[in-house]
Image 1 (cartoon, rainbow, N blue to C red):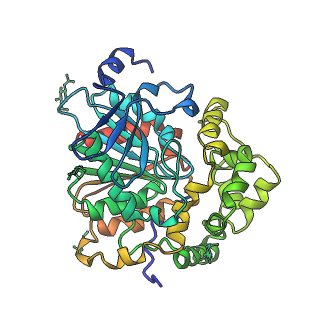
Image 2 (cartoon, helix red, strand yellow; image 1 turned 135 degrees about the vertical axis):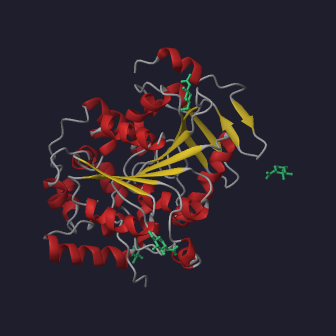
Length: 382
Ligand SMILES: *[C@@H]1O[C@H](CO)[C@@H](O)[C@H](O)[C@H]1NC(C)=O
Ligand SMILES: *[C@@H]1O[C@H](CO)[C@@H](O)[C@H](O)[C@H]1NC(C)=O
Ligand SMILES: *[C@@H]1O[C@H](CO)[C@@H](O)[C@H](O)[C@H]1NC(C)=O
Ligand SMILES: *[C@@H]1O[C@H](CO)[C@@H](O)[C@H](O)[C@H]1NC(C)=O
C-alpha cells in the first residue's frame, strides 16, 4: 500500500470591549450572496456556544460544494496586519482556539477559525469521501474567497495538520507562513492510513513500550461515535487530562484501551488548564442532538481507509517541500504526537524551519496559551 510512511503521525487527534466593537462591524443583511456565489449567514444558530465571549463573531457560509461551514471571524482592525486561519483537530472545534482570539484580534490581526466538516455548527455529511484532504482543502480555499481573505498565515493543530499539509500542496501561494502545533507536516504521499498506523503502533511498541495510535481502529468502526456520545464525560476526561503522559500511554494509545475505559465510565484526572465550564460547552458542541462524535470520526475513516490514495499518488515529488517559512511548536509531554515524530516528519521538507518545544501536553494552545501565542506572533512579525 503506501510504504513510505512519514510520521508526523498520530493524532487523535477578555477584556476587549473597545476593539471588539471595531472588529465586529460586519456590514449588511443577515444573509448575503457574494460574487463567488457562496452565501453568508451573519446569525447562525449558536445556542451550543452560549457562554463564550466571541458570539458576535460567529457566522456561517454555504459554499458551492454545498457544504455549510460555521466559523469565527474577526476582520483585521489594523489593515496592514494579516488574518490567521486556525485549523483545529479532534475532538476540537473553533472553540478550542478561544485563548487565541483576544490575543491576536487585540493586536490588529484578522481571524478565521472554522468548525471543520463534521464538527460543531458545520455540515456533517455521512459520506466518508467528503472528508478527503483534497475535498476539505478545496472547501477551505472556497471559504477564504467567500469571507474575502487574501493576506494570511495558517495555524493547525492535531488532525488539522494533515489538512494544512495538503493546503500547502494544493494552494501553495495562499499563505505567507505556516504554524504546525503538536503534529507536524505530512509530506506526500501520506502515511496516515491503516498500514501506516499499524506500522507505527508496532514500531512504537517495540521501541517505546506502548502503542500510540490504537484508537484509530476503534474510530474506524461504524458505531464508535455512539459509544463516545454515551460516555461523553469519561471521554472528555481522557482527552483533556492534564496528567500526561500516563493516561494517553495507557488509556488512549493502546488498541482496545479507550473503549474499555470509557465504557466503564472511568474518569482521568483533569484540572489545570480546563474548567467545568469548558467541559460543559464542549459537551454541548458535541451533543448527540447536534450530531455527536460520529461525523467527525469520518476524518479518521477517510485517512484509515486510504481514500486519499489516488490524490496522493497524483502529487509530483517536486511538490514535497514547503517553500514558505514554517514554525513547528511541539509538545514535550504528548506521548502520541511526540516531538521526535513531528520533527522527523517536518524537518526534511521545510528548508525554512523554526522549531520550539513547549513544556505541555497535547493541547498546547490551551494549556500554554501565552507562550504559544507569543511564539506565533514573534514568528508572524519576523
Ligand atoms: C455564480 O452563479 C451565476 C448564476 O448561476 C453563474 O453564471 C456564475 O458563473 C457563478 N459564478 C461563479 C464564480 O461561480
Ligand atoms: C499596524 O501594523 C503595522 C505592521 O505590523 C504596524 O507597523 C503599525 O504600528 C500598526 N498600527 C497600529 C495603529 O497598531
Ligand atoms: C474500517 O471500517 C470499514 C467499515 O466497517 C471496514 O470495511 C474496513 O475493513 C475497516 N478498515 C480497516 C483497515 O480495518
Ligand atoms: C527539499 O528540501 C531539502 C532541503 O531541506 C532539499 O535537500 C531537497 O532537495 C528538497 N527536495 C525537493 C524535491 O525540492
